[in-house]
Length: 345
Image 1 (cartoon, rainbow, N blue to C red):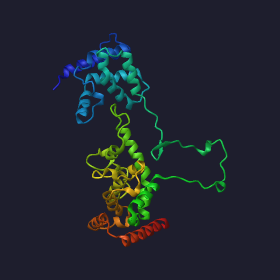
Image 2: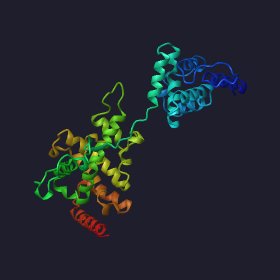
Image 3: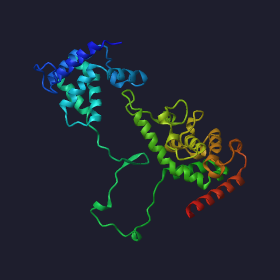
């Protein structure tokens, strides 16, 4: 247990360095470079690791919790609030932590104290929040018609425009690969694939951005990127695409992620990857087609309502390639009726 008298003495000295001298004597100016240099020289422990700011996990949290109770943290907090009185309170902690983690550069004479001040000041900048809209994995800029410098043409005089949808292309790819079993792609299944394809692309882009390192400046790419986003134990929980598909039933989320991102057993079974790689849908290996057939029933709402045992039997029969045309025709009809009822309400 630390000596409370020693801590009180250190705190009194720290407050004196930041201009709150309890003895009435002269002290350095509030928020000055001189006072910061003295705080770093006399209060920064030699045991602080140089990579403290980049550490993560329970050990790092414990280190910061212990640091918050020291005279160094208290002195730097007062110093930051004196140096930048207009700074918001919630950013002061970030600036103090930055000063603690980077203080060793000044102590070791690698940085000047003015450079440390600049680094702490930049840590206090709050980035302006801007809504970023993405389509097919690319950032798009929205333009308001209110500020458009042109007259909008009458819609009836516009020629019909052709739009390209990646999801629509994947549905066509899947139908060709299934061959005689293309009836399994019910209208509901096609709609789910089309609607969530763009969401999957955006998610892959975000996972890629999070995996950028000095050794890997572009982040994960190819099938490694797909593996990092699949809902498996090997994937980071925060990267799992099933969280993005949270508005779907659990069997549908899992089946959709397998269809779009592949599986660990067959990573090349990813519809997205095969389409981007230019793989012909007519040359899909038999095992991959079997995997696709097994997951397709879960994309039809009426089939998902089956009992777990019946749904498992449906998956097994689909994987074998049994003729289930009648079942899927009824499922397609039931799904359409459900949609019509929802619209009527």
